[in-house]
Image (cartoon, rainbow, N blue to C red; front, side, top):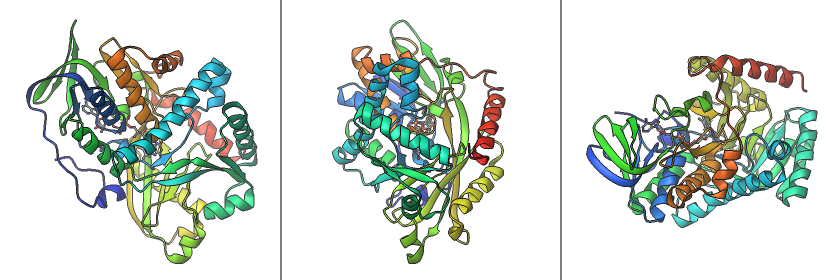
Length: 429
Ligand SMILES: Cc1cc2nc3c(=O)[nH]c(=O)nc-3n(C[C@H](O)[C@H](O)[C@H](O)COP(=O)(O)OP(=O)(O)OC[C@H]3O[C@@H](n4cnc5c(N)ncnc54)[C@H](O)[C@@H]3O)c2cc1C
């Protein structure tokens, strides 16, 4: 029987978790969704709200993938950076994407209120600069967002202010984003599952989709024990997609990242570290992202690995990065450490689209998916229900190249890029 990874989130699920059946025998529906993370559940909720008959199939447990194990940080913007989108595609598309990223953040707050989800939401996040050059870039970027999008939730923090807010001497300055937030991702995912169930979505776990067959008027989805005849499908497997025969896999590259969770901080440490309970993301390519849990444990994510086989090395690197940011925490026990897969696209923009008029997909959230997955589900549902929308067209304009080298040889290129970026971090450029 599949279990959740040994994460802090899974260990403290208060009421345990409701179980759902394995898909058996033959079924029919309007929309079959493959993958029970944020994007799949969001698509299911939005399709059900439109009155469609929906089946959601998850290979493991709902929220078992990245959605139930991530850092819980909610940020505006897309990973690639909205300025780059403007430079390459013009202000029209940049405005559209910025609007979608704002709607993505708002949607989380709306759903928490609508479905009464207890997921420990807290407000505010800091981008912390690991070099003076990056600090200057942050300031320019904040100015750009204010002028271009009237986004006025950003405050520049100088060295003294960032030291105080983060409780670390490591940074050169930072930007406080009052529009950012953080939450307990597994509780949020399971709250959404509960909402989907209330909307009559048929939910199946421990059911792996093996084959998808497209016919003129329907799609056949085959699992080990059952079969679904659907008018349309949405594939929402992100980094855990493997071997499904629909030809989108090479657009993403799965990478591993690790999170560790300390024992609770004592009162003295609590006063010094993140006194206003903001989450933090810093600018290393090996991005550090961290926050306190509601129980005042440090939840610290770090090292990204381009080989999925070097687990011990990644754990050590994450711990080393924690010690670098917070030398004062190095004697704390690490109670939990767990990893998960993120899906990178080559340009770091999510890949949301359709393979045919019956096969829709969303993936490649590039480590920035807590907010974007929700809106991706909403976009997919609108397209499934009423044909192509302006939002989908906006995503289609941003072309996604396949990772060179195919499934087996995607890694080396990215390792080279990553090593170059690390050198730049070390030399503060
Ligand atoms: C450690 C970690 C930390 C992160 N931190 C952050 C953060 O702080 N902020 C942020 O914005 N983003 C973060 N992310 C990224 C974010 O979690 C993801 O972008 C997001 O959760 C992706 O959601 P998803 O629903 O698309 O995919 P997932 O949640 O991965 O769900 C995909 C699901 O598909 C299922 N599946 C796969 N194949 C099949 C099949 N054949 N049949 C049936 N089901 C299948 C899998 O079992 C899985 O449950 C982090 C990711 C990780 C791993």
